[in-house]
Image (cartoon, rainbow, N blue to C red):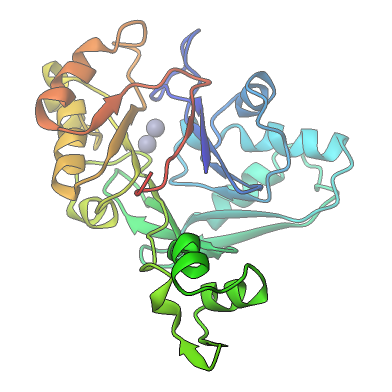
Length: 306
Ligand SMILES: [Zn+2]
Ligand SMILES: [Zn+2]
């Protein structure tokens, strides 16, 4: 699972930071979370490719959706034929429809808009799901969690070969699939050579939000939490008024959830050149790895047991 930060700025872009967008490549499935103005250029700059089939919108504030018309127009110029799904919070269909048809042209490819609510499985992928989670902002909003299925346990080849004397071959795959095999008159149970299931990875992307219990719940043991951290402590009051979070509040959420890594994003222009205050506040509240990604930062999210 490779995550590319395409836009890490708050409401207003800077020369260094684009408005919100996060690109996730999950074993070849390309998922885009939010699509701020200029997202398509960031996709080119940072080489993510354009083969996006799903756009997940957290809410319809301009800094999260104004890149949609431009991206769709480029798809159109490229003679795209594949359908595109845009998922957005319940009650925002009209706004998304307006964005899709703002120039008066209809895209040459099918665009499917789905409205989602917290708790919904938005995408049932091969080996993973994308779920909508409750967030708390000034408008209809959701966050998203990418949750991978458990993986098969480790196969103990040495034990199979040396202790049990089973030759490598079809019996190995059968055992790994969880089926017993007959070997020299004995039944070998899969548990003898296959370890317990290993958890997959969890990525949580909040979009704009106050710190909230539902995000803590969704981020339990998360391998990467990407959380709103618009301000540092000095503007905590402003964060509360505008329904954003501070670096410290994001860190408290990550700490309570037992998340392994925390990416602080949606950085206010106030700190654009130097997000150190946000980061140092967060470090005081979170024991795990925490960072403020620059635009273009790429992370290969490791498995929990790696
Ligand atoms: Zn925003
Ligand atoms: Zn917002």
